[in-house]
Amino acid sequence: MYDWRDDWQTRYARTEPKIVCVGLNYTDHAAEQGARLPAAPMLFAKFANALCGDGDDVVLAAGIGHVDAEAELCAVIGREAHDVPADDALDVLDGYLCGNDVSARDLQFGDRQWFRGKSQDTFCPIGPGVVPVSELGDAGDLRVVQRLNGETLQDSRTSALIFDVRALVAFISHALTLLPGDLILTGTPAGVGVFRDPKVSLRHGDTVEVEVEGIGVLRNHVVDLGAG
Image 1 (tube, rainbow, N blue to C red):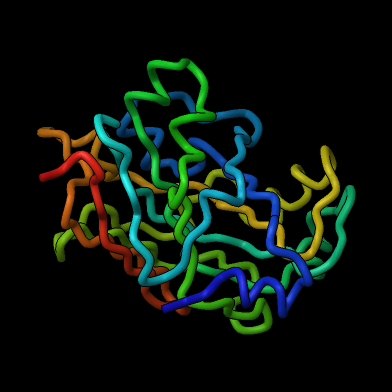
Image 2 (cartoon, rainbow, N blue to C red; image 1 turned 45 degrees about the horizontal axis):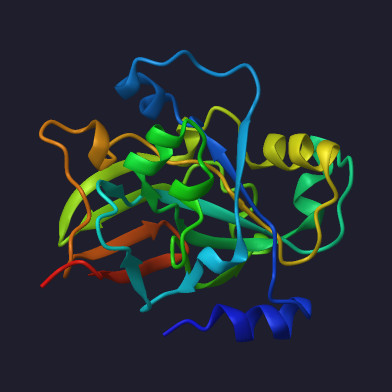
């Protein structure tokens, strides 16, 4: 089991990182929604309470409605960064993880903003461990897969990102200072449950796997507090 808190305390002397997320950042994900490609990265945030590790349970509140897993490449900041040019972006990265942007769609769409739907406890699994940027470079062409109970729902590559890792670091650091241990979830590809026909929602007892090429497999079980 991946203990992200111990890892972050050891690596970055903190356990409350910023989690900056990017919406609508894969061409195939935009296409499945019939959405126009964004002119600039669409940012939102999760809070550190949402973080959990490989092997931890994703816990669904009773009556929460439709919940999706979202497979993502997650970039980890390694040193303080403000207004970093894209050409220098890799210099401020420590490495990469698998990430899962768990999303409660009824709350997200019903609230007409994403705070409750994205930041519930355990709604941001990361793992299975940080792979250094020296091994993966700009992570520009890595396979990203989500499996639900062994069935593949998402299968794409980071080459389909609209805004790549370098561009995201530059854009985000222009707006706010990034600190060691902060996370950038780079977006999710096509295939999430809410856009499938029929729709596929996380349920009690499910096993979700997020695999990113060169990083490994992030695996979490789903516990629905309203089940039974």
